[in-house]
Structures are given as C-alpha cells and as structure tokens.
Image 1: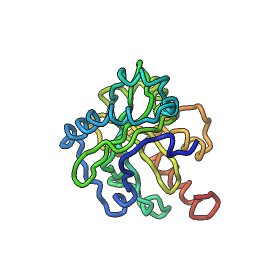
Image 2: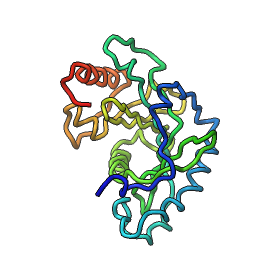
Image 3: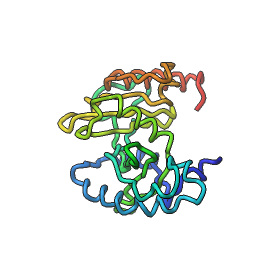
Image 4: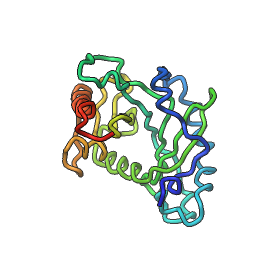
Length: 225
C-alpha cells in the first residue's frame, strides 16, 4: 500500500524550508492554547476522513473506535541544521532547532494508535495530517517502558533529515533543550547499529556525536542519502 493511502492530509508543511530560513523561534508556552485548540478541532474531522476500509492502516480496529479517541501529550518536531552536523562544527547550545510543528498521539483504549500533526500555516495553527501508526506504536512502547516520559515531561521528536533518523527526547520544563535525554527510535537504532529492540538513553552530547559520525559517513559517500 502506498504511503498516500496510509495517511490523510490537507497540507504538507515544508519543514526543510523552515529549517534553512531559520524559522524556529517557537516558544511553546506562548502558543500552547492555539496548538491544543487546533488539535482538538482537527481530531475527529481527520479521523472521519480516513477512507472506509483503511482504518487498520491508521491503527484502529474499526470506525466505531473513533468516538473513543482522545489526544495525548504532543511531541514538538525539532531538527539540527546540516552545517552543525559537519565534523568541524563546534558543540554547544543553540544547535537544536524547534520547528513550528507538533505530533499529537491519538489515544484509544489506553494506547497510541496514530499521530495528528499540527503546524503553523499562514500564521495560524492548524491540524494538517493524520497517520504514522507505526511511529505511534513505537512511541507508545517507549512511554510504557521509560518512566521519565511521564505527563509532566516535555516531549521532542528530533528528526535529522539528511540521515533519515529520529530520536525521541524528554526533558523537564525547567531544562534547556541541550539537557534533553534522547532515545534513538528504530530508524536511528538501525543506522547506529544498536540492537533493534533495545531502548538506549543518550545525553545531548552523545546524540550529537553519534549523529555527526553518521553524517561524516554520508559526506564520505559510505552511506546512501
């Protein structure tokens, strides 16, 4: 089944444009109401837009479960500019770029079934896409096994586009982004050569070093884009 059939969307945010233009100054505390309102407004319209017969591709056993769905705590999408992954780049703060996009887990019967994407479009927060049942299942397993991912934690989805790998991050509200604890998701575990089913905790410096090592391999032509 093609990826287009496994997700429904109104818009596709062009995230890399945001990265290269430096549009990353989102302070979630100032935007929280708008982000949550957009997610609440979009949840059931997007669920109802799932084509008949494709419910299982979105993590649901049937359309009757849509009425039981609710939103979990969101993950803010972040990235690191490729210039800061280069081996000669310096370490330090300010390398993690928060993007104006969030992934809300859709919860049904106590488990994450899919993710609802909320992004700023033309100055307004809007729900723009539903899907990623596989990623939702992985995050659900992670949160069940990692106590620090509790309700009070701020969640991050660190996506490194050039390497096509993702990390989940958790931090206290008082902590800086660089104090986040990162967990490599399956795409990152496979790229880094770690055990596929093992959740590993990395500090920010460890995450940056491993990402830079893989990026150096990419630049050397030893791994494919």
